[in-house]
Length: 451
Ligand SMILES: [Zn+2]
Image (cartoon, rainbow, N blue to C red):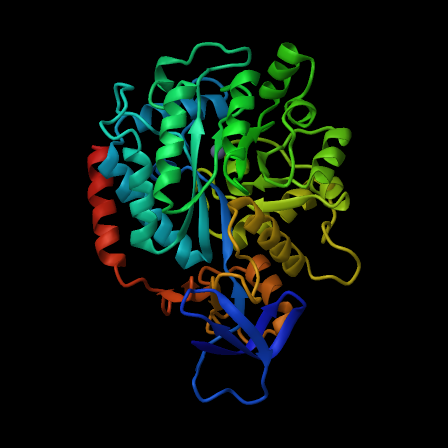
């Protein structure tokens, strides 16, 4: 099929009167500039931009959004939130997991995410026993992604300990826990099915020992280009505990011991010193920034200025899904810097568009982190595309060069009109063909969970 767009964001920047040729395999065959539209081309009704990868998701946490916003007996923080989150997930079985994830993935598509890396650690039944199919919960994520039409990178999570130094897991963590042998069987089973892009996720340096981490990296290397994702340095307490355990900070430890390279996505990396920031940028790894979640949990401010100046790569993630909107996440990256520095347009050079710069950075890093050929309107990339909604007053009459600034920094609630994943339209004029049934199932699930 061919698409014709008045404005399209190509790797070289904004171009006008663009024809995008898409093969039956869902990949882009090529692009060209044509002053008149070919007769067989479908005219898109707005500016065409690449769909955004969401590099970090815990789908079930979508159902928790808005349920943890009351003051506690002492100062609330990440750790008190985590206790509430553990209590909530006790009630989530396979059906609930699938219903929540399907609604979430639908919301992601409508907002402009076209692929998602699911950092999946809710493996076992509420008593902590494996389901008769060890991959049951993972398969429900797969089914949810297929039902919504988003492309999935599944990251089965290895989680074995509650703290640095191999401390035994807490009772509340029983649904996450594997030994290496059981995890290997889960990972190899998923590998054989070849159903989605597959990565591997050691949860954090709290949850894996150095020997386990080495075994997981080895497991990842049995397959070419397997992404490795890990949480690191989200909270100051984690940094202090890591120093007490090893003498090193979490990102420093990973750089010194884990062979961090372009296959890695280090999620958060909020608390880094100048040396870690420079070294992580030079490693080729992607930092998975989750700005709405990081703000919600009071994590801190990522050292974005120094990291980007050193050539560091970023992707954006929805994480706990208090925000499901790539434009909002990008706004928050820049916004946190403005608040901290009392300046404007902090993350760009003179004359550059902040919105365009951040959008392109998150596309490139995001594609790398999800391990999929996406993130650009270019030959060989999958046709994951968004049509921006020119009827949104925020975008109306804006020049193409300014569209992403308007989308990211304006008060828009409906930036995206149509969404294509792998050459197939999944959202048309803001709607999904199955959205009513998906929402009904989600409502019924929430009714049970909130009873
Ligand atoms: Zn996370």
